[in-house]
Image (cartoon, rainbow, N blue to C red; front, side, top):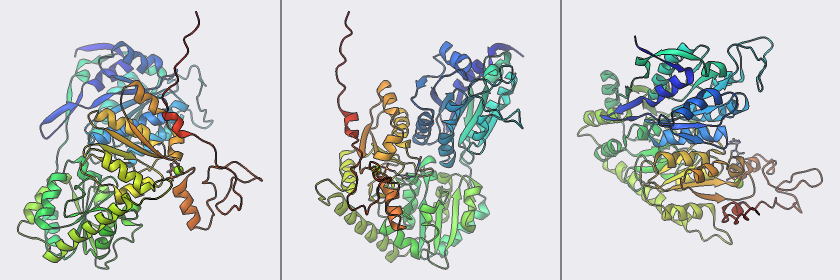
Length: 557
Ligand SMILES: Cc1ncc(C[n+]2csc(CCOP(=O)(O)OP(=O)(O)O)c2C)c(N)n1
Ligand SMILES: [Mg+2]
């Protein structure tokens, strides 16, 4: 066996650069580069490996480790999970800053590879700077926080262990049912330790992403149930888009007339003006989708994890006879709501169902009802886009202005606050990748960093980041990265001086906006809605961030 002597980090970087994926005969590199912020926990290992071979993985600098993982998640989503980024951090705070990003990626079923540095395997310098000491366990570090938020976790205690760990990491990252954050915690001494790695480990490897079909008996049963239904409804989730099943879905809807409601991740499955498109469904959905949901007798979930927003906390489907059929790559999601589980790829399954349903259609009235409700809702969207609210425009008008300024293939990015709900019901999607609202974790601070990842994956598209003042203040730093990389983002900031979405929730509970206003402290309080003479709002001039930079004065000789 021929070997090559490398540090563990050098071997891992070489390995990552040689990973390819293939679906439908199209093959390309899996990793688009490596984000990193260096510290003593990774500079001599992964840092050195990236430095000495810059041609292997392009290095990207970030401002905040959470931000770089968000960017990686945005990138993976934009690449339909067929591409990913690596994120390397130092130990301690750099590592734990990535935990939120890891949870976001895993909840949204998006592949990201995280390489947090870890304490010395040798334990010689313990406690090294930033080491958490656990009195009852010598083998625990802060990186154990990654275990519940990762779909695969390993800690590389010895150089040769990186071989099975890297292969397992790839197995999970490319698996459409299992994918999410994968964490290989890397003790800082082992990263820099040399070993004779087999050359075979470092050779080009192609991972095929299959399109498995559900069991034929389950398909036949599903087709029979659909044929027997009078008011069937499809709920399209992110899986429809990741599987590139949007054309297949639209063909199925045209032949059968089944209407479609979309989850946040599934919005864009059909263009907004398709006769079967009801738009967003659930708590933040359209009147059209929710009216049909209420009476549906058979609900066909495709690529959805059935979050509470989609089911309006299980109130959306009111028909006592309603039953579910779930098409999903993951049996975990396919089994939800006691549904008939069709475990398989969305596109392949939709195409097979279309064949099994050949010649069948919902009755004419139901088709007409869907098209009429869709048109009715579109008129309501038009009204809300053009309210003429003064002196400042309503949020719906801001969305309308961005929608009409954007080209069909441009991408709108959002995550938390009051805008995701408004976007879900009001945004007119015209391209399957044009709507990117992160609502699995709904993480404040995702917007700009996630938008950067979208732009890295699709530099030919314009990216519109819609962000509230609260989210903006939480994590604006990756604006600097976008400037550093020459990646243009159009950031639309809606400033309502506070956490307004939670303010509304607070008001609805009789809590008077407590803790959601941006006001000065006065008489011991940060203010409530009902204050007779409220303290002034914090004078934050966020628009000043967009002002052209002042010319630096030349240093005097
Ligand atoms: C990291 C994180 N912390 C807290 C929350 C809970 N939360 C949801 S929306 C929100 C307020 C967002 O404020 P802003 O961005 O200004 O949007 P607005 O609600 O005003 O539209 C908060 C605190 C969250 N989603 N994410
Ligand atoms: Mg706000």
